[in-house]
Amino acid sequence: MTDPSLLRAVSLTKVYGAAGGAVTALRDVSLELHPAELLVIRGRSGAGKTTLLSLLGGLERPTSGSVLFGDLEVSKAPEQRLVEVRRRDFGFVFQDFALIPVLSAAENVEVPLRLAGVEPALRDARVAELMDLVGLSKSAAQRPGELSGGQQQRVGIARALATRPRVLLADEPTGQLDSATAATMMELFERAVRAEGVSAILTTHDASLMTRADRILELRDGLLTHGRHRLG
Image 1 (cartoon, one colour):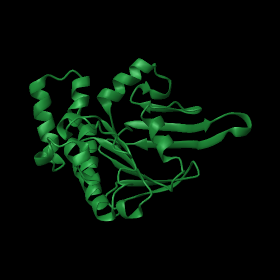
Image 2 (image 1 turned 135 degrees about the vertical axis):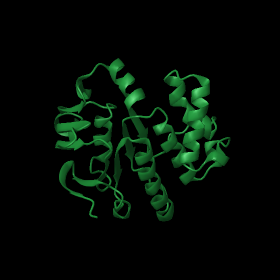
Image 3 (image 1 turned 180 degrees about the horizontal axis):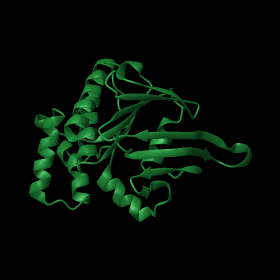
């Protein structure tokens, strides 16, 4: 018996603009994310990867089609319900890190826990656990501007995992990193996903980062063209 899908997209289409200026970013895209799966979506810049993640995470609504998270139809849920689900069940890692510059690394990781109303002692313990997981315990007091790009992305990963989300969505998380740092970051993603028991979707255009994926799908000009499972 196979595991039921945790997150499902059904015939997603997203069109920006109207009439003669309309641009179709996604066309009839369907996919499933299974429990404890690390799914990589590959594609060149402009393929529609960021749009797809935005729709899956409820940050945007599709022009047509649906996104299902368990019994919830994300694509039609009221905004307040989406806010609750994003805070509790989804973790986001952004291309530009999106860290708050005036806060320390540890304080950035703590933000989702504060928003969730977690009590101080539990917040402190969880932040310490995550800083250790991403190898930044000694840099916890430093602000983002004092950290390297790779270190900032590690903070972003830790923050995304803070509330123990069920789904992790990472948009080109290694796009601003050199190849060696990117490889290390992909290893960290896999370790974090396995250790935290979450399911993850990562987008990338870098073929060298895909060896750790359980499954790979490809987006090309807004169309999902093919996929494969990891060998071995």
